[in-house]
Image 1 (tube, rainbow over the protein chains, first blue to last red):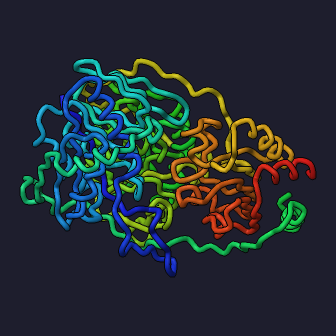
Image 2: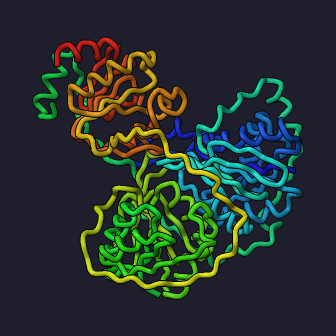
Image 3: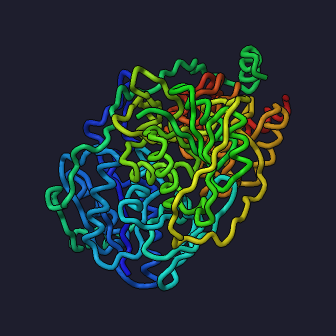
Length: 249
Length: 304
């Protein structure tokens, strides 16, 4: 059984600066989504236990080929990439179609893993779209995954409790950020990552029609205005006095 | 096509959705799935309620729930759906959107109708920015909990509706309620929030004492709950936690990553205590104290 881990290339959020309330993305390096790394770790742990291959799947611009090396170093066996500049910033309905079509080209897939949300948009819809497109069952917000032959027992962690689900394979699972602690690859693993097998497709290699999809139009995207006082206080007395003057204590 | 349909498995959130939907259209259609008390509540809040009872339909089977709602939408000729952006709702949003060929926005904190456009406000870039977006074509919009007040009493109706659902490959074996930290930090007027600057779990008693003296609640940044497990997830402030609007937030040892600040930036007054004079949190604080948080907690507890 092979495990597909869908990972998204996002701008490194720590390095985004705000200028005139606008995000400055020029020159910001790319990274893999933070929770996507938990999904990868979950896949690698299952593979170490049960065998099979971990295939990292990503769709985006040409930089993805470089960005994805981090996943190959951290335990993925192969990469399956759909690279096209048109995919940069593509919304959920496009990404869902592309990923679902790519998964159809991968053999013996038992488990398809996502992070619960991407680091940048945190919309959490692409995994669900892929499940619908492939007609597969899905479990979101997984805090544990146990594979038994042709089925899995997965804990879906909800706000008010844990739902324990038994589901037949293949299944689409999105994992929570606290399901595990992703490993940090060694230097040797990083050096070897570039030599792992990679299959690179372009959009036109997939039999999909991206016309007529619903469109998300962005009217504005600005940092919220902050007008905080930023007053430095030197002592606890001064702090308490300030809070009393504000009328909050 | 016209009309708005709302669905949430959570009754409180479903009532909030009725309020949100009325911003789009006065008459709201609501769905209940194998849940008579939800159907009563929806009708009692003025919605035309379609009550579905089907033994094959399990709320934990997201694909089946999407299939059921799709059948309702087809029958009622509706192409705008509001869901709750809790975990179940977010998981359903993408699936339902795909099933009906819709665009999808989740974690929406406000909607504003401009002609035929439903403009949705949501956090983007990890919370660094607030995007205003609208969907062209059929829409699935998931509304963040507590963005709208629950709808008041109204005069709705209940109609039974049959849907076809295939028996699924999904079985719910068990449900284990989370151990009862019933704290609601979103309702607190005062929050004392700790971050990774807190040295050890033993110091939490002093933090709790401070919060109690102020009549507030203890909250935290995400790593304190998910990595260190010192506090429950109910107390997380931020993008993947709670969005809070207290009168006062005292932030102790929190560096101020954007994913955190998105959950506290609506506070009226923010005081930050940090050893790092360049901490990002200082730019969004009203009062900044550069000091060791443990000393400050001790002194505050003595003086209050």
